[in-house]
Amino acid sequence: MSIESLEYLFLCLSTLISLVNPLGMAPLFIVLTERFEPNDRISIAKKGTLTATLILIIFALLGTYIFKFYSLTIEAFRIMGGIIFFRTGLRMLDAQISRGRSTPRETEESMESDDIAVSPIGIPVIAGPGAITASMILSGEARDAIDYGILIFTIMFTMILTFFVFRGANKLSARFGTTGLRIIQRIMGILLMVIAVQFMINGVTVVLVNIFS
Image (cartoon, rainbow, N blue to C red; front, side, top):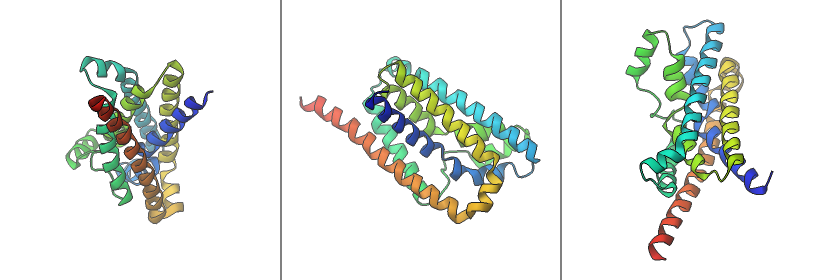
């Protein structure tokens, strides 16, 4: 594997894990599934992560075509994505759960239907706007088939990690405590903000070069 591919692998992993934020979402998963039995919680976690995996892979594979269809540039998405990621990272730094996940009304309706695995767990708790945008941006950053393979692998790896975190959410919450989970969330928030700034720098640099060249 080339240096460029390794760099792309690290970019995909750090971006997706920071945005999906399994540890930060574990307390929310506990709250949403508190009335279910342990075996049902595992089934919900499995179905939710499978749903999110499908959504993220679809957007990753269709990212390039969406750019072409709407005549969008990767630079525009870098700048827009950077703004979204920075805002999400700032909320994580304040140890707040991202508001872009689901409304109380959506959660209530999902709970009434006894099918919270797809929504709100799968979408938008796991595959939120930030993660979907990241899949499209990272797809645009891919140079060849190897990079696309890396992107699909990192999506699947992140979802497997999320499944196991949600599966052991109660144990993790008891072991780390609320303070520990918030500290981890803040660290991931800082990392996400750095990635966001770099995305914006890359996008703005290309735009300025095109304007003044």
